[in-house]
Length: 135
Image 1 (cartoon, one colour):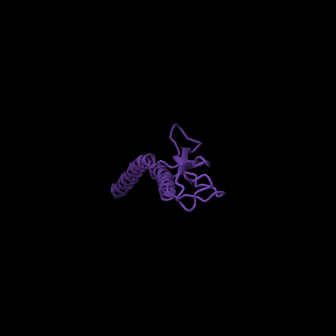
Image 2: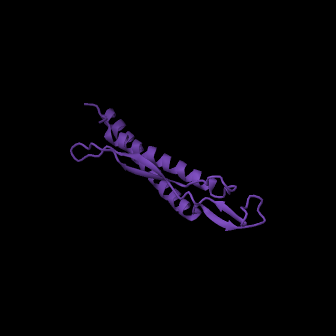
Image 3: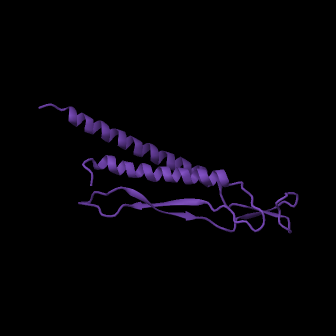
């Protein structure tokens, strides 16, 4: 473990938060990507995080990305026979991405990032104040 555990732990949180925000960005960017018949549809990504194993004396080691789970490979079929990429039955397949859920997740990820940033800043300030103490 680092000499400055609060900074290390907050840093792991920031890494997970950034991965989470990147996944949300990819989901939103691909939400309206219709696919031609036979192509695979974009699968939304959900970041699954967990505690870093090996805590010492009840103090955690932070968090890490355990995996990125992929959503449905079926997509959502919308009837639109006028669309040039519609299948023979007139359906167009879009990714199964719920923009409302993605925006909610983005707010949660943003708050988590802000909290981890504040912990990092406060820890750095505290360690710097300790270094300024003179006997």
